[in-house]
Length: 102
Image 1 (cartoon, rainbow, N blue to C red):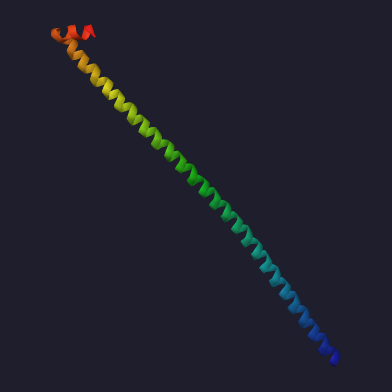
Image 2: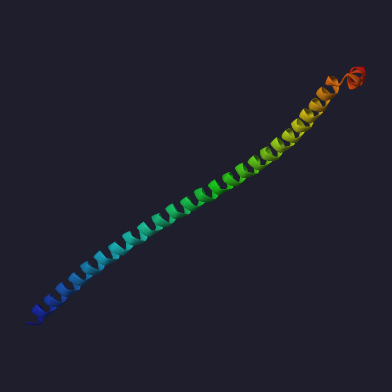
Protein backbone atom coordinates (compact mmCIF):
# COMPACT_ATOMS: atom_id res chain seq x y z
CA UNK A 1 0.00 0.00 0.00
CA UNK A 2 2.81 2.45 0.84
CA UNK A 3 4.47 1.57 -2.43
CA UNK A 4 1.28 2.51 -4.29
CA UNK A 5 1.09 5.85 -2.46
CA UNK A 6 4.76 6.44 -3.18
CA UNK A 7 4.24 5.66 -6.89
CA UNK A 8 1.23 7.97 -7.04
CA UNK A 9 3.23 10.75 -5.37
CA UNK A 10 6.11 10.16 -7.82
CA UNK A 11 3.70 10.33 -10.77
CA UNK A 12 2.26 13.61 -9.45
CA UNK A 13 5.77 14.98 -8.96
CA UNK A 14 6.74 13.91 -12.50
CA UNK A 15 3.55 15.44 -13.95
CA UNK A 16 4.15 18.68 -12.09
CA UNK A 17 7.81 18.67 -13.19
CA UNK A 18 6.78 18.16 -16.82
CA UNK A 19 4.13 20.88 -16.47
CA UNK A 20 6.65 23.22 -14.85
CA UNK A 21 9.22 22.47 -17.56
CA UNK A 22 6.61 23.25 -20.22
CA UNK A 23 5.69 26.56 -18.56
CA UNK A 24 9.36 27.42 -18.09
CA UNK A 25 10.01 26.68 -21.77
CA UNK A 26 7.07 28.89 -22.78
CA UNK A 27 8.33 31.71 -20.58
CA UNK A 28 11.83 31.37 -22.00
CA UNK A 29 10.42 31.52 -25.55
CA UNK A 30 8.34 34.56 -24.61
CA UNK A 31 11.39 36.22 -23.09
CA UNK A 32 13.46 35.48 -26.20
CA UNK A 33 10.68 36.88 -28.41
CA UNK A 34 10.49 40.01 -26.26
CA UNK A 35 14.27 40.48 -26.50
CA UNK A 36 14.11 40.17 -30.30
CA UNK A 37 11.18 42.60 -30.38
CA UNK A 38 13.14 45.04 -28.21
CA UNK A 39 16.13 44.79 -30.57
CA UNK A 40 13.87 45.35 -33.59
CA UNK A 41 12.29 48.39 -31.93
CA UNK A 42 15.69 49.81 -30.98
CA UNK A 43 16.87 49.35 -34.59
CA UNK A 44 13.70 51.01 -35.85
CA UNK A 45 14.27 53.91 -33.46
CA UNK A 46 17.88 54.29 -34.64
CA UNK A 47 16.71 54.30 -38.27
CA UNK A 48 14.05 56.87 -37.42
CA UNK A 49 16.59 59.11 -35.68
CA UNK A 50 18.95 58.77 -38.65
CA UNK A 51 16.16 59.70 -41.05
CA UNK A 52 15.28 62.73 -38.93
CA UNK A 53 18.91 63.84 -38.95
CA UNK A 54 19.07 63.45 -42.74
CA UNK A 55 15.86 65.48 -43.12
CA UNK A 56 17.25 68.19 -40.85
CA UNK A 57 20.43 68.32 -42.95
CA UNK A 58 18.39 68.51 -46.16
CA UNK A 59 16.28 71.27 -44.63
CA UNK A 60 19.44 73.24 -43.83
CA UNK A 61 20.72 72.80 -47.39
CA UNK A 62 17.35 73.81 -48.81
CA UNK A 63 17.22 76.94 -46.63
CA UNK A 64 20.74 77.86 -47.77
CA UNK A 65 19.75 77.32 -51.42
CA UNK A 66 16.60 79.40 -50.93
CA UNK A 67 18.61 82.25 -49.44
CA UNK A 68 21.13 82.03 -52.27
CA UNK A 69 18.33 82.12 -54.86
CA UNK A 70 16.86 85.17 -53.13
CA UNK A 71 20.23 86.92 -53.38
CA UNK A 72 20.55 86.00 -57.07
CA UNK A 73 16.99 87.16 -57.73
CA UNK A 74 17.67 90.46 -55.98
CA UNK A 75 20.83 90.95 -58.06
CA UNK A 76 18.97 90.13 -61.26
CA UNK A 77 16.24 92.60 -60.36
CA UNK A 78 18.88 95.33 -59.90
CA UNK A 79 20.44 94.41 -63.27
CA UNK A 80 17.02 94.48 -64.96
CA UNK A 81 16.16 97.82 -63.39
CA UNK A 82 19.52 99.29 -64.46
CA UNK A 83 19.06 97.93 -67.99
CA UNK A 84 15.55 99.40 -68.22
CA UNK A 85 16.78 102.79 -67.02
CA UNK A 86 19.65 102.65 -69.53
CA UNK A 87 17.23 101.77 -72.34
CA UNK A 88 15.02 104.74 -71.43
CA UNK A 89 18.04 107.04 -71.48
CA UNK A 90 19.16 105.69 -74.86
CA UNK A 91 15.70 106.38 -76.28
CA UNK A 92 15.91 110.00 -75.10
CA UNK A 93 18.17 111.86 -77.59
CA UNK A 94 19.56 114.19 -74.91
CA UNK A 95 20.32 111.35 -72.53
CA UNK A 96 21.64 109.08 -75.31
CA UNK A 97 24.70 111.29 -75.76
CA UNK A 98 25.48 111.02 -72.02
CA UNK A 99 25.00 107.25 -72.02
CA UNK A 100 27.18 106.76 -75.09
CA UNK A 101 29.85 108.91 -73.54
CA UNK A 102 30.05 106.59 -70.54
